[in-house]
Length: 190
Image (cartoon, rainbow, N blue to C red; front, top):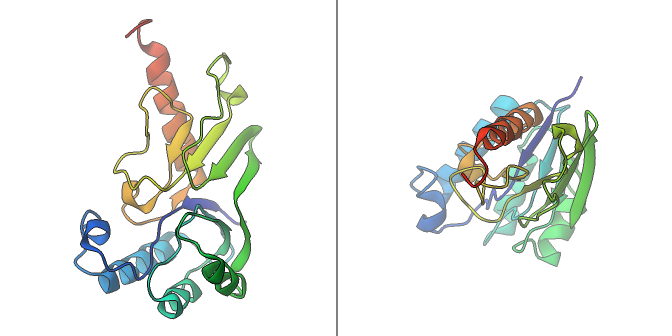
């Protein structure tokens, strides 16, 4: 049985300290290796990974070599740094299952919308958790999982808030439900 994971913003080969520094790393090379090691420690070859964009920068050939070393079947939702050249190169790899601008799946009766950018997909009017639509995103490089703490249904899956490791769908759903329950317990206006 395969598992499902989410991630974004690998930025393989991006040699800027403002990216790898907050991840606790000292160089692009160290970042590349840390991401590959952490990815492969949780993702098995038969698992499915939705990568929500910004795959690599600067050195496309080295970035492709990084992707070749990753476990899983990878669906990419393109980000703002995924140029046409990078898209075409990535699509040739055996472990890349496809590339899209947005994608939606259903998990245990809940709709999950994925895009590189944060998107509001829910109006919060539903009483039951399973009636809400979840939006997963990357792009923001934030250290926490919520762009807006008042919105439990827009969740950041980027490496920056998950210790450079893809996050399992069960962890995502648990985090979102727990945050939703906490917000439900607040007094109105609180």
